[in-house]
Each structure stands twice: as C-alpha cells, then as structure tokens.
Amino acid sequence: MLLELREVERVYRVGGADVRALDGIDLALDAGEFVAVTGPSGAGKSTLLHILGALDTPSSGSVRFDGAEIGGLGDRAQSEFRLRRVGFVFQFFNLLPTLTAWENVAVPALLGGQSLARARPAATRSLESVGLGDRAEHRPAELSGGQMQRVAVARALMMDPPVILADEPTGNLDSKTGREVLDVLGALAKDTAAPRLVVMVTHDRTAAEWADRRVSLVDGKIRADTRSADAVAAEVAR
Image 1 (spheres, helix red, strand yellow):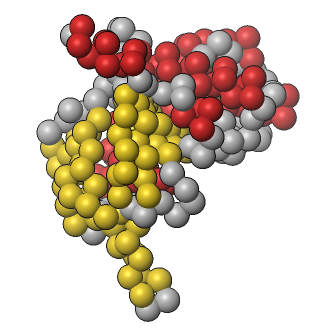
Image 2 (cartoon, helix red, strand yellow; image 1 turned 30 degrees about the vertical axis):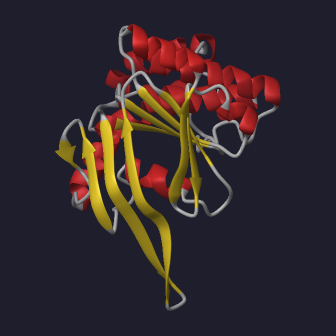
C-alpha cells in the first residue's frame, strides 16, 4: 500500500474540552485508486485529508507512506514530504492573480529551488497534460472557473507526486465543468504509465460517484468503504 493508517486518532482541545476529529481510523490506499471521502460536516473529512498530506499530525496511531512512518515527522521533513510526494488541489484554486498559468504551475518547483526559466518546460508540459497548453500565458482573470481548477491540478502535478489530494475540487464549479475536472482526476489515477493515488473530499454525492472507491466518515469513524463494480473487476483481473 502507498498510504496506510492504523488506529489513527486526532484529538483537538477546544474550549477546555477534547474534540475527537478522527477516532481509530484504519485505512489502506494504493496507487491507481480514485477515492472519494464523504460524510456530513464535522465528520473528519478534512482532518483525514490533512493527515494524509502531512499537513497535520495524528494524536496517536501510525501513518505510513510506502512503508515508512510519516506520522511523527518534524516541520522540515513534513514540508519536504508535501513538496515532493503530494500534490494539493483546493476548492478555491489558490492561484496567484499576477502570475500567468504556467508561472502558477511552476510555483512548487520554485519552492524546490529551481529558477523560473528552468521550471518553464515542465510547467508547460503539466498544463498540456490537463488540456491547457494554449492557455499558458493567460492570467487567472482571463480563465474560466474550470480552467483555473485545471491549472490548479497542473500545479499539483508539477513535482510528479504519487499522491494527489483534492479538497472539494468541484465545489466552486457548475456541473458540466465539474465533470470535466473529475475526468482529469480519474485519468491521473488510472494513468498506466504513472498511476497515482487520488483522494478527493466532497459533499457532492454525484461527484463521489465518479470515484472507484468511496469512504464514508461519521463522527470521525469509517462507516462504509465500498468499491465500484469496475474497480472490483479490475482488482480480480490483477
């Protein structure tokens, strides 16, 4: 398994009381999966995503990436893990308005120490991979919502990470544009040359149905973990 959680708990202290956001989570996730995490508000979805992406640290339990424990990494090691191993896609795109599309995509490489000129070819290829090669010089204000989200996906791919974490990626989009973004995310997971683990948090039941695996959280616990018929057939074929 690419990512494994064992007995993971996350407890926050709020107003003098303990709030258990995650309560004994066991979860194994692998490359090639497109996973939707669903559940009501306050169920622990965002906390789970943050734990998977080393944006947060579990209160107890084990989080392993490719067999190595990452649950207790220090700040510097967490930052390096996030930069090299995980690509993040957010509901509100988080693009820098003064930068062109390719410059926004190149930002992770700049954080990794590359110059803008050196990062440009890879940023352009990343945009081409999501169908936006002809929008490389456009700034966010010149793009549609769907195009901005695809720029965000291209940025998540910039460092070629094995894991993509998407937090409500269709929440700001109309249904047609949302489907286009879901198609892109699904294709990333199923890329035969470089399959990735794609985990998407969503409140949208229709969006969740595009995933081949659905994990439902309630009160910090996994209440259901189901695979689509196609995913089960593919697993049997392997």
